[in-house]
Amino acid sequence: MKAPFVRVLFYFEAVNFTIMSSLLITIIQTQLQWEDKAANLKMLEAKILGIKEKTEIVVLPEMFSTGFSMKPETLAETMEGETLQWMKQIASKKKIILTGSFICKENENFYNRLIWILPTGQYGMYDKRHLFAFAGEDNHYTAGNKRLIASVKGWKINLQICYDLRFPVWARQNSGTENAGPEYDVLIYVANWPERRSLAWKTLLQARAIENQCYVVGVNRVGNDGNNIYHSGDSMVVDPLGEVFYHQKDAEAIYTISLDKAHLENIREKLPFLKDADDFSFQ
Image 1 (cartoon, rainbow, N blue to C red):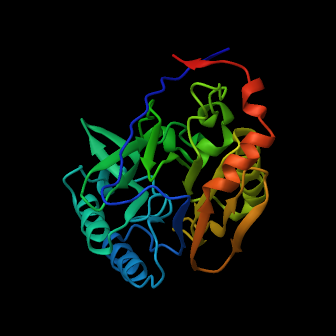
Image 2: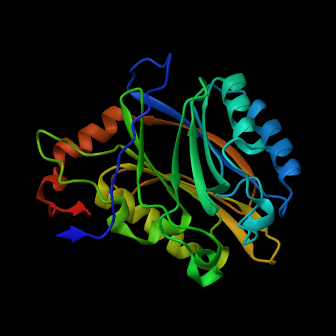
């Protein structure tokens, strides 16, 4: 089976993180001020620096500095812009990995770009592959064609954005052969997913976890956006069997969860379904 997309993997290993069996991830489900970059960065900085418990990765929603805007001509930044510099400063100060997407301009094109940034300032990036044509995203942004799989503490993490969730081929693990093993252990989606389609959001997060035998973390915003579209959040953490470990609806929330590598490996060993999957490649 041939899939029509290019797949390129980038691996970034966090400095000073030792290999352990657990991974601490903090979800920030929050309202966003519509197209107000300064207000959102100030608000998120206070939330992140206010996290009391130990954490290693902090996940922000899609387009966390602006909301899901179709005005990249006025809101986009370059990779030397304020938002990336802010991410570097926060990651360094808090000694965390920070991830989320913002509106980026490169070579006269606009991208819905996710950044995975380490405390050292090293970063990887992923440009949203599936643009939400229903809202006109494809008229303003350029689609990416490379996946980003980051590595930290022996965990491999596949990073995707919102509408990508509806397209299982883009997230699909390899066949999990004895030599290669699964490509990743955690699948993260950052989103601005409307409440009116929340059933699809919740169902698909569980489906991606079950079919790929991985943890899935979905981080969504709450509240009305500038188009008066309500977002219920429904941020979730799902285990490889589809069990929901965490779910928050409607309210703002900051939640830290520890993912257990032994639990993941035990499921894969007892139920080696990935080895029976169809072989395919991206071209």
